[in-house]
Length: 380
Image 1 (tube, one colour):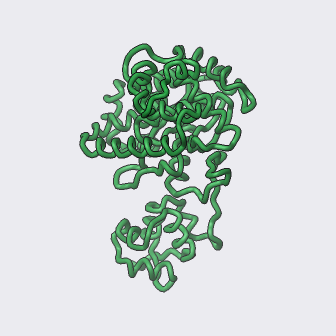
Image 2 (cartoon, rainbow, N blue to C red):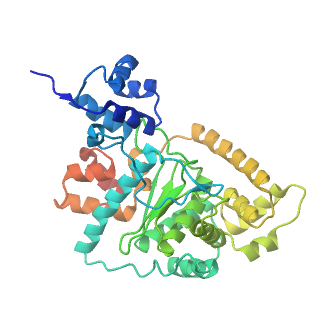
Image 3 (cartoon, rainbow, N blue to C red):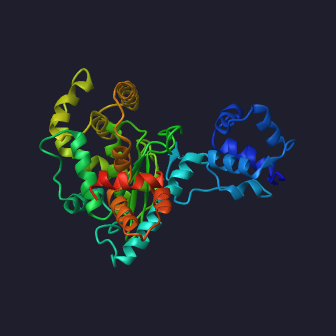
């Protein structure tokens, strides 16, 4: 049988590898080939088969057809890029960022169709404010909609975070959280983005980068919820140095929602070591030390240098804890990553025969034969 070769543009193969931030050696290992063969493909000195080209596309997170284009593709994020460094827009988005946005958009599109079939009308809670609105008014409206006070009276910040995710989902907003693109893939870059929001009148989505330290995710969750509240889609880094109007506003909303300014200032003491304030503040507000340090920075109680050193310390603590702790079960992990509203709707439609197991597996990122086990984890 004759071998079917793919007449790709070698320049696009090199572009795909570099876009995915892979060296020759890294991609060669992923493809289980020699580095010499990969060099020959990129130079156009050796032909590549269709199956090999498909494997390249899969490992570099690009559509297969991109390899055949005459000119190197120029990609843009499908939603606004709100990330900045010193007021300047960031570089070309990574392959991982583009891929995770594509995955989330595919899920959102499916849920939009599902909502339409169920006769679900526009969400009345969201998009009632804009980037010119007062952060105080937005926080007041968010607390009323979520049914929570200024801060919890008891419990840990982890419990508070779980409660907020549950209440946000009850409002019809999908919350999704991933730290990577699946097994044997590198973590999503926290330096590149911390989260994003995709506004829609019926099926808005919040995404939190789970590769971030757990204590930092709560701030990102509320930052992205603020984006939904003002009807603004976008990729965020939730940077304390943000310059864009929307990012400054959403940072202010998240900070005030989690740690009300007046209460915080009333409890803050000008001690020799500012960190001595944190245990008492943590016990009062029931949020993480990360969030409290962020609040102290925004209120100019500590310097950017002090904040940076402390966050570096917290990151190292998190990394050490991750190495010691055992990982949760596969199905529990999936359940925590994908919106429960979305998962329940998709699984129910799949078990009723309205959605193919293959299609459900693709949307959930799992093998089709694992769907029934996942349904049991959800209690369906």
